[in-house]
Length: 250
Picture (tube, rainbow, N blue to C red):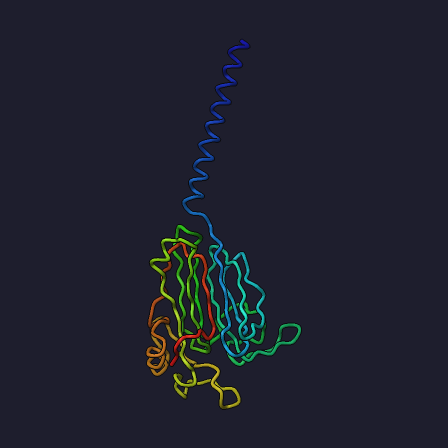
């Protein structure tokens, strides 16, 4: 009886060990096939004036507190692997110690910390949809669906020695000079002279103003709706959003 009991115990132990090894193997295999990757989003201000970036989206890992970014400054943050959201720039802002005030363009209802973008117009906007890791591609765009206020570009980058670097994603951008491009009847001005934004928008691909569409289609062919958002290889390591990129502009 003692020998039989010992044999039974050894058999149960073997089965348990086999189960744990098999379970661990498939757990590791699943993790290897679709690991979650926290990607870096870097925001750069190349403008000759301060910008107050605004970031809204659906995430469990919030971006940094919104703040003033002076000319030449930048900051980075690790995005939630499944983050989707928007980033735009605000100009000419003044806020008190409680974060209440206002901006000449891109204003969030007088608040430093933006909570949504549903009622905000006349902004150049970057949109991102990150899909969880290296097993699925990301999508991103620079969009004029709500108008225009600042030159902007989004550029991807890759990990060292990554095969995707030989087939790079497309940079998205709109680097127009609003003073030159924006039709006069759509210009938003500060003190009656300086153009701070261009007030046009789209319902899908349909423009609210044909004049806005015609002007910016020539100036910004690499922005939505003239160019659809690009799909980037899953192995993209980070994205750089630049206000006032140093590229030829119209």
